[in-house]
Each structure stands twice: as C-alpha cells, then as structure tokens.
Length: 79
Image (cartoon, rainbow, N blue to C red; front, top):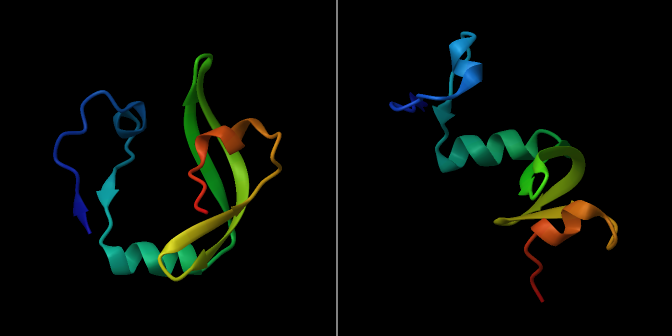
C-alpha cells in the first residue's frame, strides 16, 4: 500500500493520520472481512457519514437500506 503523495488540506493528516491507496485485492479482503461499514456522501447541507450494512457479491457491494432513507438517493441502483 503506497501513501498518497499530495495530502494537502486533509485535517486528519495534520493530526498524524495518513491516506493509503489500496490495491484491488486488499480492498476485497477488507470489504469481505465485515458486513458493517460507513457510507460517506455530500449533501447541500454538507458531508454526511452514516453506518451501513452491506455484503460483497462478486464485484459488487450490495447495501441494505430503506427506500426513504436519505442515503438511498446517493447509491447506484442496478436493474
């Protein structure tokens, strides 16, 4: 995992954190190790991060969410 080079403006990094670019295998390993995570998206009122349950099926993340939930408008729906 290689650190991302240009990290200017990230307050987490200012506090000693870091960003890392993950390769495909590492992403799949991490996503497959749990079924609960966080979904982040932007709204007119600012960024939102909400807990979300999911499952990894082949190459897709499937989220469990109510149709009326705010986050549902920020997810891609396949037919």
